[in-house]
Amino acid sequence: MNLPPALAGLLVQAVATVGTLVLYGLAGIAALEAPWICWAFVQAALAVLLATAIGQAPWWIAIHSLFVPAALLLDRFSAPTWLYLAGAALLALTNGNAMRERVPLFLTSRAARERLLALLPEDRPIRFVDVGCGFGGVVSSVGRERPTLECLGLETAWLPYLVSRLRCWLSPNQAAVARRDLWTHDLSGADVVYAYLSPVPMERLWCKVLSEMRPGTLLISNSFPVPGVEPLASHGVEDATGSVLHVYRLVGAGGPPALDEATAAPIAVASAACS
Image (cartoon, rainbow, N blue to C red; front, side, top):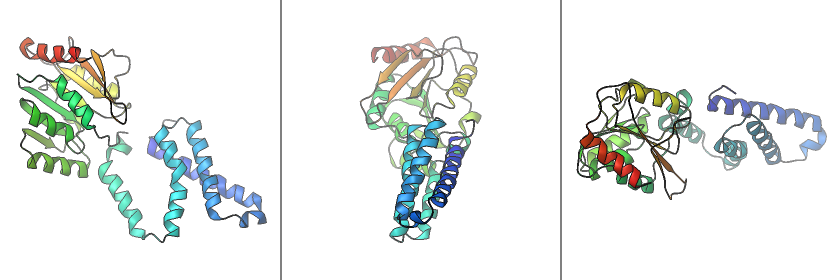
């Protein structure tokens, strides 16, 4: 399906619910003897089958399996109506890009942050940009632990942006956070760009990187490789999600003049040595 995952998920829920009502009607009087929770699991089973058939991601299948049973369980315990509204508002504030860009909120683990820091030079300031900084864990760590000429996080979802701004303000580092769309931000000045997005925008991000960044600079993508492009190195991380940091070095990019070798060499050597 070419629909955004959220709309496809909504369609799956609607079709599964209609299918459940049809089955309930066909079952006749006998259906009245079964508790509604049983029909909730029927709806969940239909939703899981539909989601699997259209190739939705595993986390969507998990959501479909629990959505209606959880809603009925909350209703049984007389959960206040504002709780549903608060949940929807929280999702909108933290995952504002999920509908438009198909990029949910992913948080970089502590182990992945430590691995990332090991790839960055300790003796030469760099310009570092995190394109989708979430709650600011990466950009605050880099600003605190590595010398930087610039350490910038970009975020458009309101709640993560405000938290990351507060986090960087309270901690002694050189990081800054801007509420800005990565597609409108000029990457020509960056030495290292870090991304933890989703598989969907990686090809477009690579095209942007090629057109704006200098030869010798790096793109480091957490977990999601650039389709059809061989990385300089890939570094596995022992964390709960099995993260992998894919490192891409720009060679002959179409952007500004090349990064000076005194800065580029330590970055490339560190990346290759940690593989």
